[in-house]
Image (cartoon, rainbow, N blue to C red; front, side):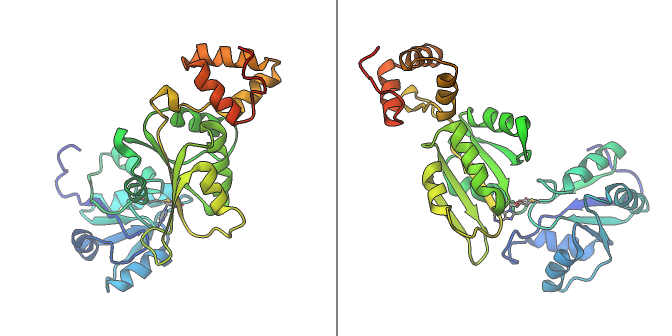
Length: 288
Ligand code: SAM
């Protein structure tokens, strides 16, 4: 950020609790108390928080459908010397919420802003998972459908870094299914539900195991998925069932499939045969 403009105010990005109302920093509370105005996604959600801390301030709605007008209002206030605290419904504003849009607009307009530290569901998921030794890729919400969704997932799941996703409970099983298709059923995942809330739940296991745990259940609340990074050792690489299916549909014999994958992926034929026979894909192991 450049030098602050004479007489201008500032926007503060204020992280708010993702469930437990006590997860808010003293500094965020100070800023909320001292700001001239609080810009928020949903006034009902924010009022619940402000009432809990007995904070009364003028509220300005900033949500996906009024971004242009609300940005103009915020810019005007800051230029008049006012301090605007920006909060989203939960967590770190600017992580998969309208705060993303606001950051861009503030940068474009040269408006000063400061980001305060605080909770984000993504980071709790990462720490719970124990998958982040090689780092992690945060994808947020996946594109809903089609090629873009598949490609986004495929690119991430072949990296050695863990992948972090936000998902609605309604689509959780579908997304786990997509992960299994691409990464194989043995890839380990963590599903964290309702973090910091009374009914917080952490599910761990291979993707197939976690799917099994969730099947037939009424899944409610908010969800983070963390997928372990792709295996580094060739022994551990699992060939996705979908790839085998594709090769078979294209008319390759099982012997050819083993030869191709062995050459293409640099995996020993024996290792491949073991994996394929476990999947029931190789009927005659002595063929090649
Ligand atoms: N800005 C927020 C943050 O920093 O985490 C994220 C906002 S995004 C609109 C909301 C998504 O975050 C939810 O759909 C869910 O995937 C995740 N999320 C938020 N709170 C959560 C919680 N308590 N437990 C699990 N996931 C949560």
